[in-house]
Image (cartoon, rainbow, N blue to C red; front, side, top):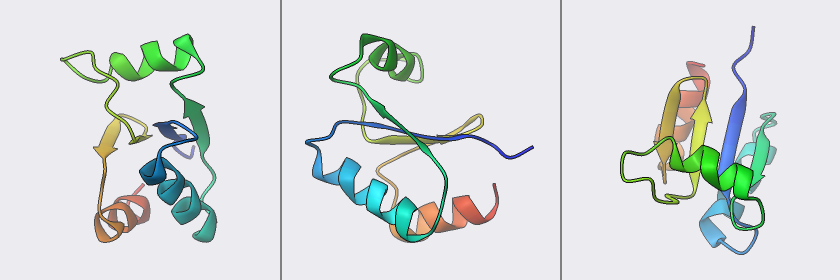
Length: 81
């Protein structure tokens, strides 16, 4: 079974939009979770970090999580999912 890829962020965040474009350009299926307009998404993101802050953009694949990865790091991660 494929791991679900989630992108936590906001529509107005340029880094979030960069990752959305990166994933689309690489034809990667993912779910975008807006954390400013949804308290549910924000709460889910907060559980990923001990400090309980809205650290976005964050990308998760299964149990793995990356925050602000480089293109190279993200691609490597996607290749091993």
